[in-house]
Image (tube, rainbow, N blue to C red; front, side, top):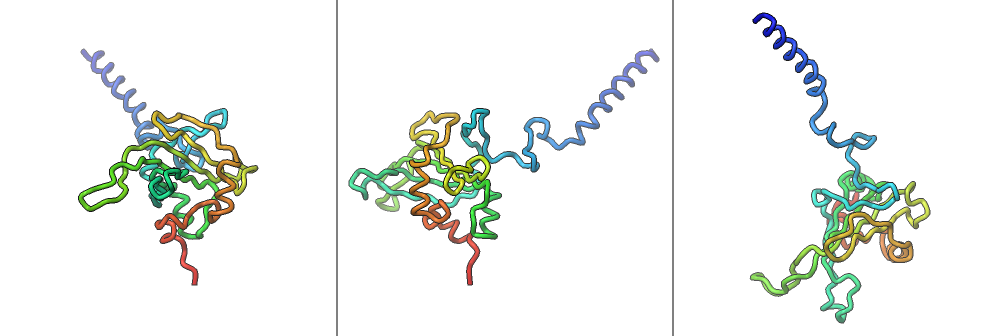
Length: 201
């Protein structure tokens, strides 16, 4: 009987000895590795350098939704969908301070089809289904040879989307952004960015 009690005490002591170090580790750290700065990575790349489809971006800072519908462009708008755009929170916080897009900025553009054109509130353009996903990233090390160090990625304009993609050709996106946007970002169409930028005297 005493031997049985000693065995129980030994097992309990052993379990507490193992559990104590585990309790000292924040929940989740052992499940998902953190980035070197202690934060989860904004986006991830494959070993081949392809961008993996981002997750969780709908919890980022929403900056706007431009729309250039076919109805107003003779049926041939190059981008006829709603473009709901999100910016990673860390870069947005720095943008509020400087009015500049810091290295590491990630913008995710979720494409949404034009759905109904009439609602109880009246006629207009109303969001339909999700149809595509695009990402732009500023990274001076990874994209040192790209104008402005920006690279652009498209996961497709039809579901199911690709799970990982290589960057678009420079000529397909960079030139337009370089010639027509502010620091490669069309921020004049994003009211949240206009409101967040530091006010100059």
